[in-house]
Length: 126
Image (tube, rainbow, N blue to C red; front, side):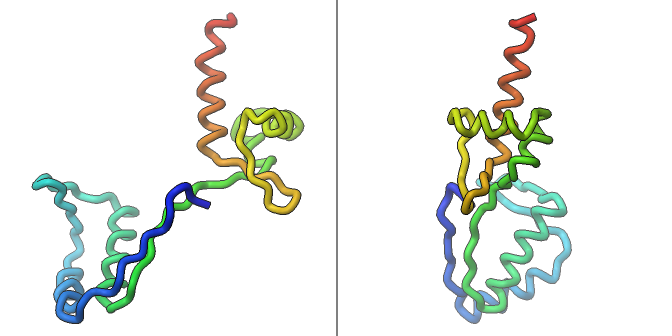
């Protein structure tokens, strides 16, 4: 599940694909944005190299983002609360929930935002 629509890029022209394939022989991947060089970390470099390799092979490419979706048990463990409390939070609308059949799925970022808000609130209560 993603909040952003996937984006599809058509295949490169054969000459462009060949030049890209040749350039991918280098093992250092540096990205230039507005003239500033950014060296990518290993995971990001591998993802970009995979994308570029697919374009170099003449494939069209779709890119989408993936949000981490949690079960009730995973959300409860992450937040340090009971499963029952997670269900109460979703029933009350405190945590947005998506149902897959009868199973609740909760976005990790919503759980983490709630935990952070609880931590900010605690010093005021003490």
